Amino acid sequence: MTQVFVCLHINCIRNGSESVLRAFQENPVVDVEVIASVCQGQCNMGATVRVLPDNIWYCRVKPEDAIEIVQQHLKDGEPVARLLHPRIHPRWN
Image (cartoon, rainbow, N blue to C red):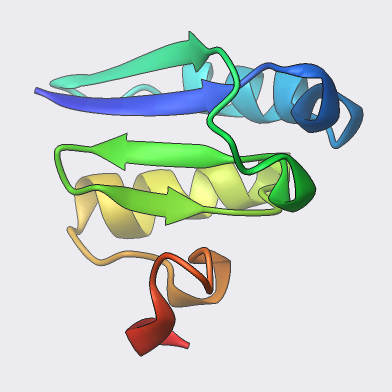
């Protein structure tokens, strides 16, 4: 099962992660579990979203980006390159 972790720690909340979580929850995908997470250690890049088992890290995610991640990544299998964390996924940027 795919899991989507949306950080709900202090800095990510300041950057709108509660709305990001809501956007994922309002756009469900079969066999994908959306989880409100504790700090993922990427506070300066929030709102942070991590997709497992793909181990894809998204940064500075906005609610409208969540909808794009749902369609392009979770449904079509292609990560959204413009949202990938540049330190974790340098080859994509």
